[in-house]
Length: 214
Image (tube, rainbow, N blue to C red; front, side):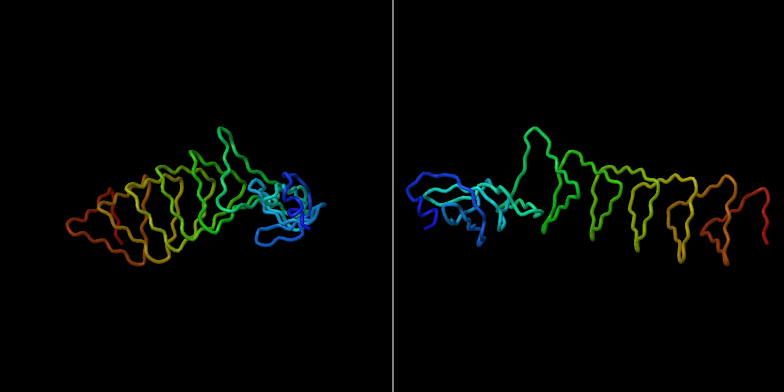
């Protein structure tokens, strides 16, 4: 006779036992009074495994596993619920810590919403097929930046650059189209090429204290 049948007219009581089998989210628990089929209570967030020691509440309506008291040695502890899960701290902070690492895994999207987000790590990597960044201001201070890309398109209303030394190496074509181009150097401008062509639709002017051609 099972524990539930024996307690058909008895008030609820607590008893511990071992999980012998799990089928369709129903636990078969071996108690001192017999075997019972128990459902996991909503407050029992830790998912029981076969061989775990659990605390059960038994009454005339059935049995519920209230808590997992003891699990297999070195077995991971899994918090499992049906449906959505919300962790909330009213007026305080929530801290998630681990000695070996933390992994966030989702088959759908992952969202982060906060007034301020801070990420600190000695080393990091991001692998994203498509990335969109929308913001009002971006400030970055780095010692070195290396960018390798097949195509780079930049669209800006104003672009300013201040550098101490600039080097550009273009293998094929370097083309500039602008309404006005103003190039100035305090010392010297050198233009060299196998062929050089200078043409103007209205006026071409060369001015200097000395002009050497040839």
